[in-house]
Image (tube, rainbow, N blue to C red; front, side, top):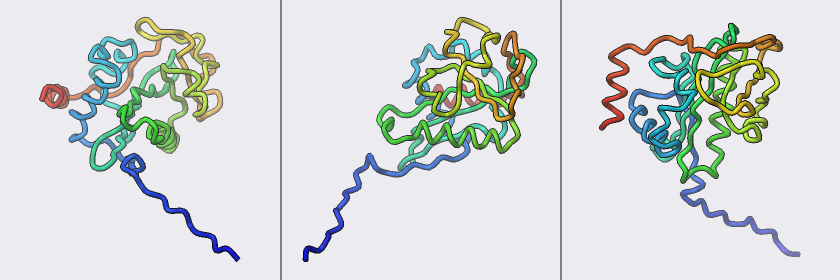
Length: 195
């Protein structure tokens, strides 16, 4: 009779676990560097950035992924009016290129969606790749009559509803409605990014 042996599994640094937690003030400078690395330093001129400039993320909806003590992923959600309907805009979602095969982006998405739903938000909109975001329930079904304050590709404007009908009849411009950042917080973020 042959005894079965348990295979030995060597854990490599690539298999190191990560945690998702609320974003901290200490994350801001590293977050900005990560976003520059993922999207380029010209990311501030992108259309969706106009919905975030000078605004604070929605309460409890700024998340960081941390692996081995380092910030390796980020996502934030922001209050907007989608043609008169309250909603959130998700973005940017970014993961350190060295960690992209670890499921961090998907984990950030699942956590962000669960947190938004738990806080009673009814809909989330984003600008992104439909094949990637479809697995989380996003589609262009409710965004056809919505516009962004700048150029965008129509097939990349996606939404998910947590409350059926939350975006029914939504048409017109998506505009920011979130709380403005305090002057002190803006200066602190700029200083941290410059350091």
